[in-house]
Image (cartoon, rainbow, N blue to C red):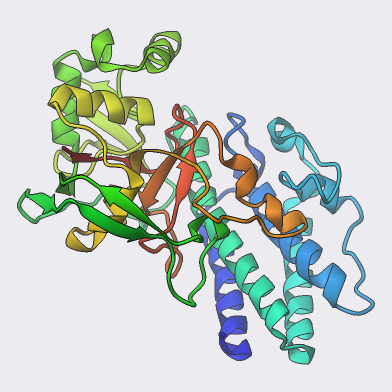
Length: 386
């Protein structure tokens, strides 16, 4: 169990970091929602605050006064147990409440959490607070990614920050890591925090396989583009081929060819594509097609987890070939928090690792992220296996 004071410091540090992410924004940036998958920054600020109010303060702080009776309707995301909510696609219509009122809401709830934990230190509350902290860290990753999409679809392609550098490279020489046939243990196995979808530690049999110690780079992906990879139907799933043609997809998200030179929009503005930086903002469909073109495949999430100690990871969320499904013996939590992961275990692929948008103290080798196969606004890349 984490000591209360340490956990409270972690809470306050996390709350501050969310607001630091928003610091470079103009007031007009806070409410923009270009597509349904992207939530306005103001909504993230409110939702992460509502989470603490709804699941910790309302049931556990005596005589707690709700900050605003409309905020549960406005800032509930998908918790059917809690009640009605604004349709996700309408989050960009929330010109009210004002940004200032949302920041006031954050201060109000943060101070009430501090008050509660000065008086209560039981394990149930500590576990709830830790869950709330990591929930906000998840939204920090989404917040930064959503901000990039908002600014990257602004015709002026404005700079978010000169400080945040999203470009990375892997300097170690390429190598195929050989993994022996055998039975491997999968899933979380410590007392540290994890989500329920990592539990139900189990054994899997894996045939022998090879997995790359490096992520696929922009240079390698440009070779796929130049070879006509986006025009070769036989490299794609049928659904992926439909997606490519219906949406006229020809390059990764944010890429622009200017005077025959590839550029991409980054948090630092429009820049030349760096050849040795890992490719990012690609869908599962694109990752699969690239692997097919190279004559390889994507690793399963079990292959990835079993080999992860042999290569560096965390620069890109890595698509795997695994469907997002429950582990054996998986059980959902009771009540509203049971909606956190289990209800999404259908029609999605697992991603492993983390990315430059993932906050500190949040990812781990057993962390299972998940997205639908066409999505690519997250910092998603790929690693090959064979």
